[in-house]
Length: 253
Image (cartoon, rainbow, N blue to C red):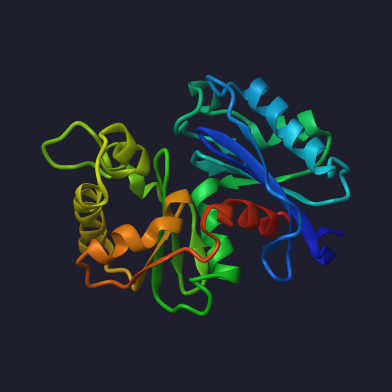
């Protein structure tokens, strides 16, 4: 059934917002306006479920015959969330996919948010037809990462949590877009933090391409030219919609 679908719903759950839309699976484009609600304070499972219901009802696609993919900011294995990035610790070791399926009364595909953004860029964007190792990074509340090798996703890479030698804060606490806002950095100051991060990824993994996603990617011209890297680095084609598009695409896989 789902494999023949030409459209699906993608819902992208983040630390600050939950957004969703109906997606054209042939073009990898939104078929509806994007609906966004605030992530409930504390991001407890029941409250997040209610917010997801609100997104689906607002879109008018709560019926089960439309495939649904959900992206979530955690390590996801076999439908269970094994971490909790910017959401309640109640998600750690939680049967999240089953929880959403029971609460929504429908089957879903549930995956890590950065991984689904990587799938969107792989199928419809900057990683299409790219050989070798592609690393997508989403710069937002944290740093999400997706590793794509010769067109295959290597899930749950979590490279935003690399540690900096001699520092207590990990990479995302130091270099995410939220750190720029928190520490009131200008583009040049923030780019110096990004320089450390991407140079470190280059040293560890020797990628063939970096793709930068997240909402800040719409301002890519302000910071990407300030980086001095051996690896090409480009903004994500689908920017802040990549999570929605990738989640929808995986819903029919």
